[in-house]
Length: 113
Image 1 (cartoon, one colour):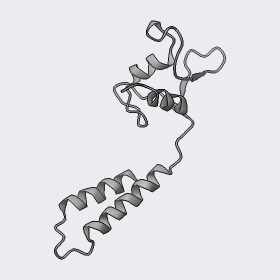
Image 2 (spheres, rainbow, N blue to C red; image 1 turned 90 degrees about the horizontal axis):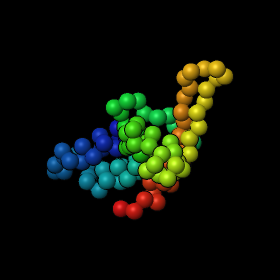
Image 3 (cartoon, rainbow, N blue to C red; image 1 turned 30 degrees about the vertical axis):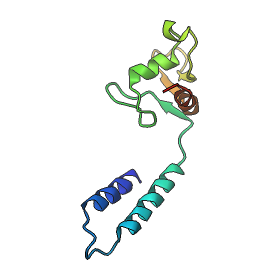
Image 4 (cartoon, rainbow, N blue to C red; image 1 turned 180 degrees about the vertical axis):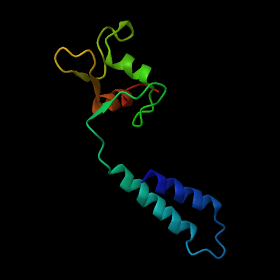
């Protein structure tokens, strides 16, 4: 859906509206509808940490910043502000760390600008 919105915006920017089938107002309506339907897409409840050198698609945060938010450390008073869980089989060395997306987004919304 995001590609459709970007494509419509690009089309709106490139069009001269002399002889085109769509007017500028019609294209703006299409963009607004695409953006509104994009908001209605359900977000997952739990997300994984982004891969190294990548950013989270929901928050835009890097892996290292997200690690600081989910782990108790001196900077956050040894109380992690964002909820997370580690799923690991018994006696396994590795597991997967899941972050509660609602917890992350509410933490970000409560930060002062």
